Amino acid sequence: MAGIYIHIPYCQRKCAYCDFVSYADQSTLGAYVDAVKSEAELYSQMLAWKRFDTVFIGGGTPSILPAESIAAILDAVRRSFNVAESAEITIECNPCSITDEKLAAYYDCSINRISVGMQSDDDAVLKAIGRLHTKAVFEQAMNSIAKSSIVNRNVDIMYGLPLQTTGGFIRTLKYAVSLPINHISAYSLILEEGTPLFDRLNSDQTELPSEDDCADMEEECHRILCDAGFTRYEVSNYAKPGYQCRHNLNYWDNGEYIGLGVAAHSAIRAEKQWTRFSNFTDVKAYIDRVTMGIVPCKDVMTIDKREEMFESIMLGLRKTDGIRMDDFSKRFGVDIMDEYRDVIAKFVYDKLLYCRENKLFCSPRGMSVLNIITEAFYEHMTATEP
Image (cartoon, rainbow, N blue to C red; front, top):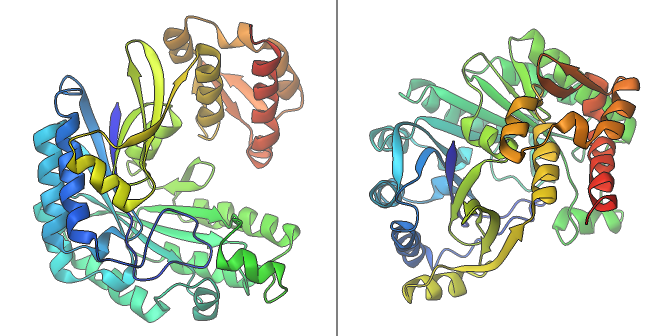
């Protein structure tokens, strides 16, 4: 399986916790849409042989674009790539920019999955993290989505936020499971240096919930979502049967993908070598390079076999199903149990990893210390490098 990611870097306003490449200045929006279409065309010959099974339009705030611009980008992608008729096509949306007309236009251009950033249903928490919408605005957006023909629906929520309590987060969870959705992404806040929220915390203008409170929130999240019929299939993602995000599963399977747009990342096997590359992070530099007919990537890295194996383990263990050991052997020509015998044995003994039915996967307790587990695999890789 392979995917296409399309980055739309425009927002009405950046959230206080966001360190993604995104801009409130929309003066280059028209030229940017043309550049993304042109970038897709630049790849048309290079990747004509490959089939793509998913398309994900992320940001930023893709729904800030006129619907006809989204349709034009998707038309260019279909002309340039072999996109499967059954492809999962997702668009991220902000509640403030969702309308009945946009949803109808999305459906008409074959978008079949929508992801909405709720984060919280508490207006005070939303204001503290710089979100533009309120609970009332979100409810209006969800009413429009419920009437639409797009039935594959995700909502993002966050925990560990300023002013958030465990009780408040439980209320958010109970509200979320009452919505007409079939997928929930539940992320812990990662405080990034250089963001307004990071600066406010360092100057004692705000405070975050304690580690114990965050652990309680994560535990309640798992309990409430599972009780409501959602199944955890990745560290931060829960879905009802048949609604796992195929695009993200490809990432966690360390599959191939092409990124279009400013700061977009790609990973493909080029001439039998696993290769990663990323685009320019400056919008003008990106547009200028594409206008000259040059693929706009600035960093190209070839990944050796040992690092590729580690990446596959690091990403695969994020899934509750873990890593299929026969797939690992087929991809790399080595038995994962032989290659990492001591590391795996230690964590199996500690009941943090399980080896069952051709799968290597984390126990629930292992999921909570996944960083420790992946660090041990990384140390093994660096200690045994030729």
